[in-house]
Length: 258
Image (cartoon, rainbow, N blue to C red; front, top):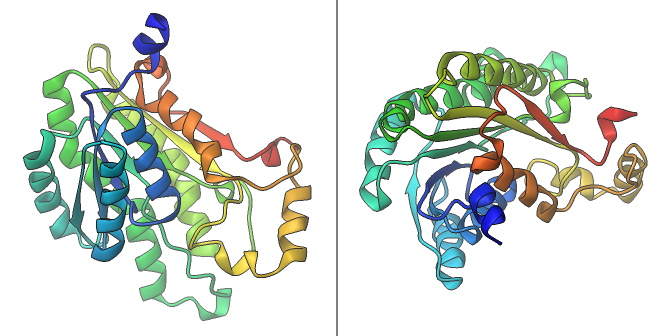
């Protein structure tokens, strides 16, 4: 057990997770808490944040929450400052907040374009920028971005979302280049989930034939369950991934391998 604890142990770490009120963000936050990290849930919806925090406390984990619209750049610095008041400065950041308005190309406005880019691509950079000084002071930090199948593939009615997620792969590389210098102790990687049932994909899950068709696009033959993200999350948040940075790991059942 000693080597497992050395490689994958994150007890005593502090994780800030955006989009943590539901879906992938909430599942990742809970997973990190299960592994021993103190977790700060960040999202807009207070009731769901309270519930997520209570779920962690039920397993005797450490958790808190902060309400924040990550598209509000002025709010990010305040959120980071407040986050340190709970368990100390965060040394794990998971950028899981995301939005896909699913508009056809002729219905996309400048405002809807900006909203999706701001939440999906702009906020992850500026939130990390605020947290990097604290990570450097600790000499350790893990940034985990959430990419997508649309980082590599085009899907209907998702041009701004696809652009943001394509950008996320490159942003992950650029963050690594900027912050993963020798002795910094900081790495930056991304998880690209396949199809999982979340708020963003719930409209698809109303159509059984669509979901079955998506499952057939994978090699494994099924769509993802939120529990499938646990292993990759712990790996990227722990010392086991200390020599991996700038990479995007597709947790997609082999979708992008076909």
